[in-house]
Length: 137
Image (cartoon, rainbow, N blue to C red; front, side):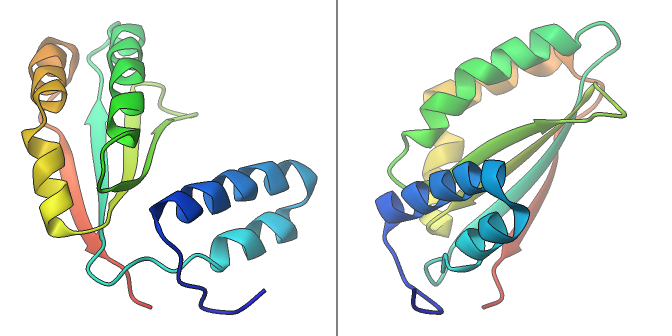
């Protein structure tokens, strides 16, 4: 397999799926599969931290489970994964990669994203904390 392999969105999704499957077999195999994915120049990574109000964790999880498949279908979305804290079950961490800043802007303007943001206001303890990142190599 070539180092620094450049692949399109569908191939990236397939590679990431392969990485997840490989993880079930061995950690070194999974690490290698992920390392071979090169993001397109200009890709934007978003890490978002959302904290649920006490007793609202299950509702926030349900609202988020409805959102994620829609985000994954967006033309410019390369990855959308949500994690929940093991030691802090009210913490939800979003890890998303968009092929460009324009794709991120389209995502933020999507009606279902705006609706999700309104729906979770009563479920969260404070605002969503966003970190925007660019890949280095």
